[in-house]
Length: 401
Image 1 (cartoon, rainbow, N blue to C red):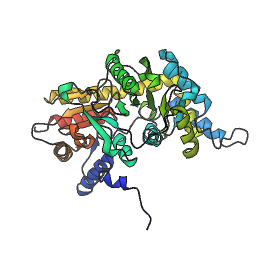
Image 2: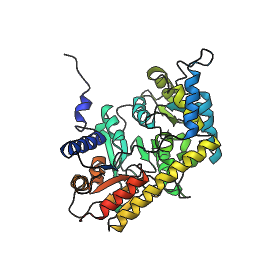
Image 3: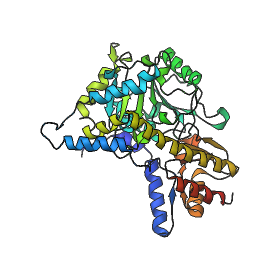
Image 4: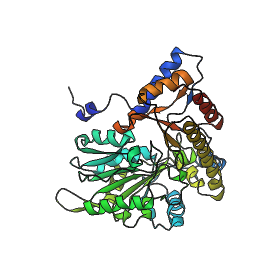
């Protein structure tokens, strides 16, 4: 009989958000009249903005004519979108990113997982704890599960991780952070870039929630830090920025100055390796999705997605204030769409999850699912309607703690 990848046996039995969904479904099946407000999984609820819809309609029409039909596109992404990203997400912030350093994909999650293909199994890995599970699981799948250092992000250190002690080769950072909703200032992020420079490490910087930053001292890109282009890859997503969770489009920036080594000591361009990987394993994001993404960068598109982001940030404010008003300790919700709430004394993450579901019909995400330092917390998401957010806070405010 053929053999399968042994690393899969080292994974936890179920993916966190699948398990949350399973438990909610089981509760609803047993209680069909329950009106569940879902504040757990970070899927968006606002419709895609008009400018993007119009652009995608035009792109669909393009596919109906021989003169404008698009089949296989470039694996790296269409030039029109790469140009728009370079000009708007980087040049406007004084960051020089060339278009051939930008790779369009079908979402940040895919690229974050797939980039593991580039790294030797002997590399040591560092992740913050709590952590987005994809970082850990994809390294376990790639034979690096034995060498992961967890960096606690807890109230005692204001949810800012200490620098590693085991000299990792690969460092995952997500800021604004999922799940805690916290951020790093420019000075704090500079420490990580300097650490990577000094230790020959690479930083995989997940910037999926960049659009929610409101604080002036929080960088929108790791490339705002001098030297970051020599040590960092940046992942961006249109999912939460523009409602593309179902459309699927995002991008990854890999500077040409970022270099690693083969086992024989020869130098390798990470940009070239990723390009080779994509050309082999990926046929590109759809033309229709990329035309939609391009429209985000028009003046009208910027205005429209700005309204959506402000809508979610208002939800976050309501959740944060509501939980604080109940006497609970709260983090996040200022520069991010996530609110990180400490459970009442003596109540575990999953116990509080069950309590909220059963007594309030509000679904959250248990912090324990994000790692050991997440135990004793839950995550609430602002990605719901304003009406549901207000209703959820009202229900929670009547909870007996």
